[in-house]
Length: 485
Ligand code: G6P
Image (cartoon, rainbow, N blue to C red; front, side, top):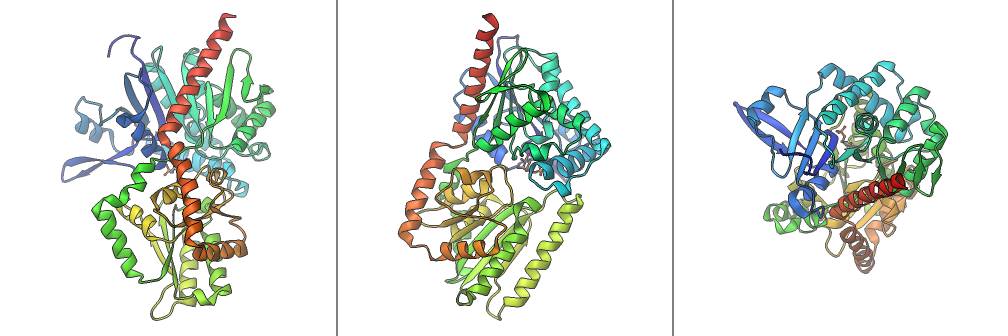
Protein backbone atom coordinates (compact mmCIF):
# COMPACT_ATOMS: atom_id res chain seq x y z
CA UNK A 1 0.00 0.00 0.00
CA UNK A 2 1.35 3.41 -0.84
CA UNK A 3 0.70 6.87 0.58
CA UNK A 4 -2.34 9.09 0.95
CA UNK A 5 -3.17 9.54 -2.76
CA UNK A 6 -4.86 6.18 -2.92
CA UNK A 7 -8.63 6.24 -2.43
CA UNK A 8 -10.29 3.22 -0.90
CA UNK A 9 -13.92 2.30 -0.47
CA UNK A 10 -14.30 0.55 2.87
CA UNK A 11 -17.59 -1.23 3.45
CA UNK A 12 -18.42 -2.25 7.00
CA UNK A 13 -21.22 -4.57 8.05
CA UNK A 14 -21.79 -6.91 10.95
CA UNK A 15 -21.36 -9.99 8.78
CA UNK A 16 -18.74 -10.63 6.16
CA UNK A 17 -20.15 -11.73 2.82
CA UNK A 18 -18.80 -15.26 3.05
CA UNK A 19 -18.20 -18.25 5.29
CA UNK A 20 -15.03 -20.29 5.57
CA UNK A 21 -15.82 -23.96 5.83
CA UNK A 22 -13.34 -26.62 6.85
CA UNK A 23 -13.76 -30.27 5.96
CA UNK A 24 -11.05 -32.95 6.02
CA UNK A 25 -8.48 -30.19 6.63
CA UNK A 26 -9.54 -28.46 3.40
CA UNK A 27 -10.82 -24.91 3.72
CA UNK A 28 -13.33 -23.57 1.24
CA UNK A 29 -14.91 -20.17 0.88
CA UNK A 30 -18.69 -20.13 0.55
CA UNK A 31 -20.22 -16.86 -0.51
CA UNK A 32 -23.39 -15.74 1.27
CA UNK A 33 -26.26 -14.62 -0.90
CA UNK A 34 -28.21 -12.14 1.24
CA UNK A 35 -29.52 -8.88 -0.18
CA UNK A 36 -26.73 -6.58 0.94
CA UNK A 37 -24.08 -9.06 -0.07
CA UNK A 38 -25.31 -9.63 -3.58
CA UNK A 39 -25.92 -5.91 -3.87
CA UNK A 40 -22.40 -4.92 -3.02
CA UNK A 41 -20.84 -7.91 -4.75
CA UNK A 42 -22.28 -6.89 -8.13
CA UNK A 43 -20.80 -3.48 -7.51
CA UNK A 44 -17.48 -4.81 -6.31
CA UNK A 45 -17.29 -7.15 -9.27
CA UNK A 46 -16.69 -4.11 -11.37
CA UNK A 47 -20.04 -2.81 -12.58
CA UNK A 48 -19.92 0.34 -10.45
CA UNK A 49 -18.92 3.72 -11.76
CA UNK A 50 -16.85 5.17 -8.95
CA UNK A 51 -13.80 5.17 -11.18
CA UNK A 52 -11.36 6.87 -8.85
CA UNK A 53 -11.61 4.20 -6.13
CA UNK A 54 -8.40 2.24 -6.23
CA UNK A 55 -9.31 -0.61 -3.92
CA UNK A 56 -12.34 -1.99 -2.12
CA UNK A 57 -12.37 -3.38 1.37
CA UNK A 58 -14.95 -5.23 3.39
CA UNK A 59 -14.76 -5.28 7.16
CA UNK A 60 -17.06 -7.43 9.26
CA UNK A 61 -17.13 -9.89 12.11
CA UNK A 62 -15.89 -13.36 11.27
CA UNK A 63 -18.06 -16.43 11.67
CA UNK A 64 -14.99 -18.65 11.60
CA UNK A 65 -11.96 -19.06 13.88
CA UNK A 66 -8.94 -16.85 13.40
CA UNK A 67 -6.72 -19.87 12.85
CA UNK A 68 -8.76 -20.97 9.87
CA UNK A 69 -8.60 -17.52 8.35
CA UNK A 70 -4.80 -17.42 8.76
CA UNK A 71 -4.46 -20.81 7.14
CA UNK A 72 -6.75 -19.81 4.30
CA UNK A 73 -5.11 -16.52 3.40
CA UNK A 74 -1.51 -17.07 4.37
CA UNK A 75 -0.77 -13.39 4.14
CA UNK A 76 -3.09 -12.60 1.26
CA UNK A 77 -6.25 -10.82 2.32
CA UNK A 78 -7.93 -10.77 -1.09
CA UNK A 79 -11.02 -12.85 -1.69
CA UNK A 80 -11.82 -11.97 -5.28
CA UNK A 81 -13.03 -8.48 -6.04
CA UNK A 82 -12.22 -6.99 -2.66
CA UNK A 83 -9.89 -7.19 0.29
CA UNK A 84 -11.15 -8.40 3.60
CA UNK A 85 -10.35 -7.62 7.19
CA UNK A 86 -12.28 -9.95 9.50
CA UNK A 87 -12.87 -8.91 13.08
CA UNK A 88 -12.72 -11.66 15.66
CA UNK A 89 -14.91 -10.88 18.65
CA UNK A 90 -14.92 -12.91 21.84
CA UNK A 91 -17.89 -15.32 21.60
CA UNK A 92 -19.50 -14.27 24.90
CA UNK A 93 -19.35 -10.58 24.04
CA UNK A 94 -20.59 -11.26 20.51
CA UNK A 95 -23.57 -13.23 21.79
CA UNK A 96 -24.60 -10.46 24.16
CA UNK A 97 -24.28 -7.97 21.30
CA UNK A 98 -25.93 -10.03 18.54
CA UNK A 99 -28.56 -12.09 20.39
CA UNK A 100 -28.97 -9.36 22.99
CA UNK A 101 -28.99 -5.68 22.09
CA UNK A 102 -29.12 -6.09 18.28
CA UNK A 103 -31.81 -8.71 17.99
CA UNK A 104 -33.70 -8.68 21.30
CA UNK A 105 -33.79 -4.89 21.73
CA UNK A 106 -33.22 -2.92 18.52
CA UNK A 107 -34.77 -5.38 16.07
CA UNK A 108 -38.20 -5.70 17.78
CA UNK A 109 -38.35 -1.99 18.61
CA UNK A 110 -37.50 -0.83 15.09
CA UNK A 111 -40.07 -3.30 13.67
CA UNK A 112 -42.88 -2.10 15.95
CA UNK A 113 -42.89 -5.01 18.40
CA UNK A 114 -42.37 -3.00 21.61
CA UNK A 115 -43.64 -5.80 23.83
CA UNK A 116 -40.77 -8.02 22.61
CA UNK A 117 -38.08 -5.50 23.56
CA UNK A 118 -35.63 -6.58 26.26
CA UNK A 119 -33.93 -3.97 28.42
CA UNK A 120 -30.54 -5.04 29.70
CA UNK A 121 -27.57 -2.80 30.47
CA UNK A 122 -25.19 -5.69 29.89
CA UNK A 123 -26.28 -6.17 26.31
CA UNK A 124 -26.02 -2.44 25.64
CA UNK A 125 -22.47 -2.51 27.03
CA UNK A 126 -21.66 -5.39 24.67
CA UNK A 127 -23.13 -3.36 21.80
CA UNK A 128 -20.83 -0.47 22.69
CA UNK A 129 -17.90 -2.83 23.07
CA UNK A 130 -18.34 -4.46 19.65
CA UNK A 131 -18.86 -1.09 17.96
CA UNK A 132 -15.67 0.06 19.71
CA UNK A 133 -13.72 -2.97 18.45
CA UNK A 134 -14.83 -2.15 14.90
CA UNK A 135 -13.97 1.52 15.44
CA UNK A 136 -10.46 0.75 16.71
CA UNK A 137 -9.76 -1.35 13.64
CA UNK A 138 -11.08 1.29 11.26
CA UNK A 139 -9.46 4.21 13.07
CA UNK A 140 -6.12 2.48 12.71
CA UNK A 141 -6.45 1.90 8.97
CA UNK A 142 -8.34 5.00 7.77
CA UNK A 143 -6.42 7.43 5.55
CA UNK A 144 -7.36 10.80 4.06
CA UNK A 145 -9.49 10.30 0.96
CA UNK A 146 -10.95 6.95 2.01
CA UNK A 147 -14.71 6.47 1.79
CA UNK A 148 -16.21 4.59 4.71
CA UNK A 149 -19.66 3.06 4.26
CA UNK A 150 -21.20 1.54 7.38
CA UNK A 151 -24.25 -0.71 7.16
CA UNK A 152 -27.18 -1.37 9.41
CA UNK A 153 -28.51 -1.33 12.95
CA UNK A 154 -25.76 -3.49 14.44
CA UNK A 155 -23.25 -0.65 13.96
CA UNK A 156 -25.08 2.58 14.71
CA UNK A 157 -22.46 3.86 17.18
CA UNK A 158 -19.61 3.33 14.75
CA UNK A 159 -19.85 6.52 12.61
CA UNK A 160 -19.58 8.68 15.76
CA UNK A 161 -16.64 6.68 17.11
CA UNK A 162 -14.76 7.13 13.84
CA UNK A 163 -15.65 10.82 13.55
CA UNK A 164 -14.07 11.53 16.97
CA UNK A 165 -10.71 10.36 15.68
CA UNK A 166 -11.06 11.50 12.06
CA UNK A 167 -13.03 14.76 11.98
CA UNK A 168 -12.66 15.12 8.19
CA UNK A 169 -13.42 11.54 7.23
CA UNK A 170 -16.01 10.73 4.55
CA UNK A 171 -18.55 8.50 6.26
CA UNK A 172 -21.81 7.12 4.88
CA UNK A 173 -24.33 5.06 6.83
CA UNK A 174 -27.22 3.00 5.50
CA UNK A 175 -30.02 1.52 7.60
CA UNK A 176 -31.52 -1.63 6.09
CA UNK A 177 -34.43 -1.93 8.53
CA UNK A 178 -37.27 0.53 9.22
CA UNK A 179 -36.51 3.64 11.23
CA UNK A 180 -39.53 3.77 13.52
CA UNK A 181 -41.64 6.68 14.61
CA UNK A 182 -40.24 8.64 17.57
CA UNK A 183 -43.15 7.28 19.61
CA UNK A 184 -41.39 3.91 19.46
CA UNK A 185 -37.84 5.11 19.73
CA UNK A 186 -38.53 7.15 22.82
CA UNK A 187 -39.09 3.87 24.64
CA UNK A 188 -35.33 3.26 24.72
CA UNK A 189 -33.45 4.40 27.84
CA UNK A 190 -32.38 8.01 27.41
CA UNK A 191 -28.60 7.37 27.40
CA UNK A 192 -29.02 4.56 24.85
CA UNK A 193 -31.03 6.61 22.41
CA UNK A 194 -28.75 9.62 22.81
CA UNK A 195 -25.70 7.52 22.04
CA UNK A 196 -27.40 5.90 19.05
CA UNK A 197 -28.54 9.18 17.52
CA UNK A 198 -25.16 10.83 18.14
CA UNK A 199 -23.45 7.74 16.71
CA UNK A 200 -25.47 8.01 13.51
CA UNK A 201 -24.80 11.74 13.25
CA UNK A 202 -21.11 10.92 12.98
CA UNK A 203 -21.88 10.07 9.34
CA UNK A 204 -22.11 12.69 6.59
CA UNK A 205 -24.94 10.96 4.75
CA UNK A 206 -27.49 8.65 6.38
CA UNK A 207 -29.54 6.57 3.97
CA UNK A 208 -32.93 4.91 4.43
CA UNK A 209 -35.22 2.85 2.19
CA UNK A 210 -38.28 5.11 2.33
CA UNK A 211 -39.42 8.68 2.79
CA UNK A 212 -41.23 7.78 6.05
CA UNK A 213 -38.06 6.39 7.64
CA UNK A 214 -36.21 9.63 6.76
CA UNK A 215 -38.98 11.70 8.32
CA UNK A 216 -38.98 9.56 11.48
CA UNK A 217 -35.24 9.95 11.78
CA UNK A 218 -35.32 13.74 11.34
CA UNK A 219 -37.99 14.03 14.02
CA UNK A 220 -36.01 11.78 16.37
CA UNK A 221 -32.85 13.86 15.87
CA UNK A 222 -34.81 16.97 16.76
CA UNK A 223 -36.35 15.43 19.87
CA UNK A 224 -33.18 13.78 21.16
CA UNK A 225 -30.49 16.36 20.29
CA UNK A 226 -32.40 19.55 19.52
CA UNK A 227 -30.69 19.86 16.09
CA UNK A 228 -33.06 21.31 13.55
CA UNK A 229 -33.27 20.39 9.89
CA UNK A 230 -33.94 22.20 6.65
CA UNK A 231 -35.58 19.83 4.21
CA UNK A 232 -33.31 16.77 4.67
CA UNK A 233 -30.21 18.53 5.96
CA UNK A 234 -29.51 18.45 9.68
CA UNK A 235 -27.89 21.62 10.92
CA UNK A 236 -25.34 20.61 13.52
CA UNK A 237 -23.00 23.05 15.23
CA UNK A 238 -19.98 22.27 13.09
CA UNK A 239 -21.34 20.39 10.06
CA UNK A 240 -24.36 19.73 7.92
CA UNK A 241 -25.41 16.07 7.81
CA UNK A 242 -27.83 14.80 5.23
CA UNK A 243 -30.52 12.12 5.60
CA UNK A 244 -32.08 10.83 2.41
CA UNK A 245 -33.88 7.92 0.82
CA UNK A 246 -32.22 5.30 -1.35
CA UNK A 247 -34.55 2.35 -1.93
CA UNK A 248 -32.36 -0.73 -2.28
CA UNK A 249 -32.66 -2.49 -5.64
CA UNK A 250 -31.64 -5.94 -6.84
CA UNK A 251 -29.44 -7.46 -9.51
CA UNK A 252 -32.32 -7.71 -12.01
CA UNK A 253 -30.45 -9.66 -14.66
CA UNK A 254 -29.36 -12.35 -12.23
CA UNK A 255 -32.98 -13.26 -11.51
CA UNK A 256 -34.50 -12.50 -14.89
CA UNK A 257 -32.02 -14.65 -16.72
CA UNK A 258 -31.83 -17.44 -14.16
CA UNK A 259 -33.92 -19.75 -16.30
CA UNK A 260 -31.18 -19.68 -18.94
CA UNK A 261 -29.32 -22.02 -16.61
CA UNK A 262 -30.27 -25.55 -17.38
CA UNK A 263 -30.31 -26.68 -13.73
CA UNK A 264 -32.80 -23.93 -12.83
CA UNK A 265 -34.97 -24.91 -15.78
CA UNK A 266 -34.81 -28.61 -14.86
CA UNK A 267 -35.76 -27.83 -11.25
CA UNK A 268 -38.63 -25.62 -12.37
CA UNK A 269 -39.99 -28.31 -14.71
CA UNK A 270 -39.77 -30.91 -11.99
CA UNK A 271 -41.70 -28.67 -9.55
CA UNK A 272 -44.40 -28.02 -12.13
CA UNK A 273 -44.66 -31.71 -12.96
CA UNK A 274 -44.96 -32.60 -9.31
CA UNK A 275 -48.01 -30.41 -8.84
CA UNK A 276 -49.69 -31.25 -12.16
CA UNK A 277 -52.11 -28.52 -13.11
CA UNK A 278 -52.41 -27.09 -9.64
CA UNK A 279 -51.73 -23.43 -9.11
CA UNK A 280 -48.74 -22.69 -6.92
CA UNK A 281 -48.54 -19.95 -4.30
CA UNK A 282 -45.01 -19.40 -3.00
CA UNK A 283 -43.37 -17.56 -0.15
CA UNK A 284 -39.88 -17.57 1.34
CA UNK A 285 -38.70 -15.71 4.44
CA UNK A 286 -36.12 -15.90 7.17
CA UNK A 287 -37.78 -17.24 10.29
CA UNK A 288 -38.84 -14.02 11.99
CA UNK A 289 -41.94 -12.81 13.79
CA UNK A 290 -41.79 -9.65 11.65
CA UNK A 291 -42.42 -11.66 8.50
CA UNK A 292 -46.07 -12.35 9.34
CA UNK A 293 -45.91 -16.07 8.56
CA UNK A 294 -48.56 -17.12 11.07
CA UNK A 295 -50.89 -14.35 9.85
CA UNK A 296 -50.22 -15.47 6.26
CA UNK A 297 -51.19 -19.02 7.14
CA UNK A 298 -54.40 -17.74 8.71
CA UNK A 299 -55.11 -15.77 5.52
CA UNK A 300 -54.59 -18.92 3.46
CA UNK A 301 -56.85 -20.87 5.79
CA UNK A 302 -59.52 -18.22 5.42
CA UNK A 303 -59.19 -18.50 1.65
CA UNK A 304 -59.75 -22.28 1.73
CA UNK A 305 -62.69 -21.78 4.06
CA UNK A 306 -64.36 -19.14 1.89
CA UNK A 307 -63.55 -20.77 -1.45
CA UNK A 308 -63.93 -24.53 -1.17
CA UNK A 309 -63.95 -24.72 -4.98
CA UNK A 310 -60.20 -24.01 -4.86
CA UNK A 311 -59.39 -26.96 -2.59
CA UNK A 312 -57.23 -29.52 -4.41
CA UNK A 313 -56.55 -26.91 -7.11
CA UNK A 314 -53.88 -24.89 -5.31
CA UNK A 315 -50.81 -25.56 -3.17
CA UNK A 316 -48.95 -23.16 -0.95
CA UNK A 317 -45.19 -23.77 -0.88
CA UNK A 318 -43.97 -22.12 2.31
CA UNK A 319 -40.20 -21.97 2.76
CA UNK A 320 -38.84 -20.72 6.06
CA UNK A 321 -35.11 -20.17 6.38
CA UNK A 322 -33.60 -20.78 9.85
CA UNK A 323 -32.44 -17.61 11.63
CA UNK A 324 -31.34 -16.36 15.09
CA UNK A 325 -32.30 -19.69 16.59
CA UNK A 326 -30.95 -19.00 20.09
CA UNK A 327 -33.40 -16.16 20.71
CA UNK A 328 -36.54 -17.47 22.42
CA UNK A 329 -39.01 -15.38 20.40
CA UNK A 330 -37.66 -17.00 17.22
CA UNK A 331 -37.94 -20.51 18.57
CA UNK A 332 -41.45 -19.86 19.82
CA UNK A 333 -42.42 -18.56 16.39
CA UNK A 334 -41.08 -21.68 14.72
CA UNK A 335 -43.26 -23.84 16.97
CA UNK A 336 -46.30 -21.68 16.22
CA UNK A 337 -45.73 -21.95 12.46
CA UNK A 338 -45.21 -25.70 12.56
CA UNK A 339 -48.30 -26.28 14.69
CA UNK A 340 -50.36 -24.15 12.36
CA UNK A 341 -49.07 -25.92 9.22
CA UNK A 342 -49.79 -29.30 10.84
CA UNK A 343 -53.27 -28.28 11.91
CA UNK A 344 -54.15 -26.83 8.52
CA UNK A 345 -52.82 -29.79 6.57
CA UNK A 346 -54.64 -32.13 8.97
CA UNK A 347 -57.87 -30.23 8.46
CA UNK A 348 -57.88 -29.92 4.67
CA UNK A 349 -55.67 -32.65 3.17
CA UNK A 350 -57.20 -35.38 1.07
CA UNK A 351 -55.53 -38.59 -0.05
CA UNK A 352 -54.48 -36.84 -3.25
CA UNK A 353 -53.67 -33.39 -1.97
CA UNK A 354 -51.92 -31.48 0.78
CA UNK A 355 -52.56 -27.74 0.84
CA UNK A 356 -49.22 -26.61 2.36
CA UNK A 357 -45.78 -27.84 1.43
CA UNK A 358 -43.62 -26.60 4.28
CA UNK A 359 -39.86 -26.53 4.31
CA UNK A 360 -37.65 -25.26 7.13
CA UNK A 361 -34.22 -25.02 5.58
CA UNK A 362 -31.89 -22.95 3.44
CA UNK A 363 -32.51 -22.78 -0.31
CA UNK A 364 -29.80 -22.87 -2.95
CA UNK A 365 -29.97 -20.17 -5.61
CA UNK A 366 -31.07 -22.81 -8.14
CA UNK A 367 -33.98 -23.90 -5.95
CA UNK A 368 -34.98 -20.33 -5.15
CA UNK A 369 -34.93 -19.21 -8.79
CA UNK A 370 -36.84 -22.35 -9.85
CA UNK A 371 -39.53 -21.75 -7.21
CA UNK A 372 -39.89 -18.10 -8.24
CA UNK A 373 -40.38 -19.23 -11.81
CA UNK A 374 -42.64 -22.18 -11.15
CA UNK A 375 -45.15 -20.38 -8.94
CA UNK A 376 -48.24 -18.48 -10.08
CA UNK A 377 -48.48 -16.17 -7.09
CA UNK A 378 -45.79 -14.73 -4.78
CA UNK A 379 -47.32 -14.15 -1.35
CA UNK A 380 -45.11 -11.75 0.59
CA UNK A 381 -46.86 -10.39 3.65
CA UNK A 382 -44.49 -9.15 6.38
CA UNK A 383 -45.99 -7.27 9.32
CA UNK A 384 -43.03 -4.88 8.98
CA UNK A 385 -40.04 -4.94 6.70
CA UNK A 386 -37.42 -2.30 5.95
CA UNK A 387 -37.61 -3.11 2.23
CA UNK A 388 -38.16 -6.82 1.35
CA UNK A 389 -36.06 -7.91 -1.58
CA UNK A 390 -37.94 -11.21 -2.05
CA UNK A 391 -40.81 -9.20 -3.55
CA UNK A 392 -38.41 -7.64 -6.05
CA UNK A 393 -36.69 -10.92 -6.84
CA UNK A 394 -40.03 -12.63 -7.47
CA UNK A 395 -41.06 -9.94 -9.96
CA UNK A 396 -37.66 -9.97 -11.66
CA UNK A 397 -37.82 -13.75 -12.12
CA UNK A 398 -41.10 -13.71 -14.02
CA UNK A 399 -41.66 -13.79 -17.77
CA UNK A 400 -45.07 -12.57 -19.00
CA UNK A 401 -47.15 -13.67 -16.03
CA UNK A 402 -47.16 -14.02 -12.24
CA UNK A 403 -48.88 -12.01 -9.51
CA UNK A 404 -47.20 -10.45 -6.51
CA UNK A 405 -49.28 -10.07 -3.36
CA UNK A 406 -47.40 -7.69 -1.10
CA UNK A 407 -47.90 -6.32 2.39
CA UNK A 408 -48.46 -2.59 2.44
CA UNK A 409 -46.21 -2.53 5.54
CA UNK A 410 -43.08 -3.57 3.60
CA UNK A 411 -40.83 -0.74 2.42
CA UNK A 412 -41.01 -2.25 -1.09
CA UNK A 413 -44.74 -1.42 -1.28
CA UNK A 414 -43.80 2.24 -1.87
CA UNK A 415 -42.32 1.33 -5.23
CA UNK A 416 -44.58 -1.57 -6.16
CA UNK A 417 -48.06 -0.09 -6.36
CA UNK A 418 -49.00 -2.47 -9.22
CA UNK A 419 -48.77 -5.47 -6.88
CA UNK A 420 -51.89 -6.62 -5.04
CA UNK A 421 -51.30 -4.70 -1.82
CA UNK A 422 -52.75 -6.08 1.43
CA UNK A 423 -52.98 -5.41 5.10
CA UNK A 424 -51.13 -8.53 6.34
CA UNK A 425 -53.07 -8.60 9.64
CA UNK A 426 -56.45 -8.90 7.98
CA UNK A 427 -57.29 -12.53 7.10
CA UNK A 428 -60.22 -11.58 4.92
CA UNK A 429 -58.13 -9.15 2.93
CA UNK A 430 -55.36 -11.71 2.44
CA UNK A 431 -57.94 -14.34 1.39
CA UNK A 432 -59.44 -11.91 -1.11
CA UNK A 433 -55.98 -11.02 -2.45
CA UNK A 434 -55.21 -14.72 -2.98
CA UNK A 435 -58.41 -15.08 -5.00
CA UNK A 436 -57.55 -11.97 -7.00
CA UNK A 437 -54.06 -13.32 -7.65
CA UNK A 438 -55.24 -16.75 -8.75
CA UNK A 439 -57.87 -15.40 -11.10
CA UNK A 440 -56.19 -12.32 -12.56
CA UNK A 441 -56.47 -12.25 -16.38
CA UNK A 442 -53.14 -12.90 -18.12
CA UNK A 443 -53.24 -9.57 -19.93
CA UNK A 444 -53.45 -7.70 -16.59
CA UNK A 445 -50.64 -9.78 -15.11
CA UNK A 446 -48.43 -8.99 -18.07
CA UNK A 447 -49.19 -5.29 -18.03
CA UNK A 448 -48.46 -4.91 -14.31
CA UNK A 449 -45.30 -6.98 -14.55
CA UNK A 450 -43.94 -4.80 -17.33
CA UNK A 451 -44.33 -1.66 -15.25
CA UNK A 452 -42.86 -3.27 -12.13
CA UNK A 453 -39.95 -4.77 -14.03
CA UNK A 454 -39.08 -1.53 -15.77
CA UNK A 455 -38.80 0.15 -12.38
CA UNK A 456 -36.55 -2.65 -11.11
CA UNK A 457 -34.30 -2.31 -14.15
CA UNK A 458 -34.10 1.47 -13.84
CA UNK A 459 -33.32 1.42 -10.14
CA UNK A 460 -31.22 -1.68 -9.72
CA UNK A 461 -28.57 -2.33 -7.15
CA UNK A 462 -25.76 -0.70 -9.12
CA UNK A 463 -27.86 2.41 -9.41
CA UNK A 464 -28.45 2.27 -5.63
CA UNK A 465 -24.72 2.12 -4.82
CA UNK A 466 -23.80 4.81 -7.34
CA UNK A 467 -26.59 7.07 -6.16
CA UNK A 468 -25.56 6.76 -2.50
CA UNK A 469 -21.86 7.29 -3.14
CA UNK A 470 -22.48 10.21 -5.48
CA UNK A 471 -24.63 11.98 -2.88
CA UNK A 472 -22.03 11.30 -0.22
CA UNK A 473 -19.50 13.11 -2.40
CA UNK A 474 -21.92 16.02 -2.82
CA UNK A 475 -22.44 16.35 0.93
CA UNK A 476 -18.67 16.43 1.46
CA UNK A 477 -18.29 19.03 -1.27
CA UNK A 478 -21.03 21.14 0.33
CA UNK A 479 -19.35 20.87 3.75
CA UNK A 480 -16.04 21.99 2.23
CA UNK A 481 -17.54 25.06 0.56
CA UNK A 482 -19.38 25.98 3.78
CA UNK A 483 -16.12 25.71 5.74
CA UNK A 484 -14.25 28.09 3.43
CA UNK A 485 -16.98 30.76 3.52
C1 G6P B 1 -31.81 -8.09 7.83
C2 G6P B 1 -30.79 -7.08 8.35
C3 G6P B 1 -29.38 -7.51 8.02
C4 G6P B 1 -29.15 -8.91 8.47
C5 G6P B 1 -30.17 -9.86 7.84
C6 G6P B 1 -30.02 -11.29 8.28
O1 G6P B 1 -31.89 -8.00 6.45
O2 G6P B 1 -31.08 -5.81 7.84
O3 G6P B 1 -28.45 -6.65 8.66
O4 G6P B 1 -27.84 -9.33 8.16
O5 G6P B 1 -31.46 -9.40 8.22
O6 G6P B 1 -29.99 -11.40 9.66
P1 G6P B 1 -28.76 -11.99 10.45
O7 G6P B 1 -29.06 -11.71 11.88
O8 G6P B 1 -28.78 -13.45 10.11
O9 G6P B 1 -27.50 -11.32 9.97
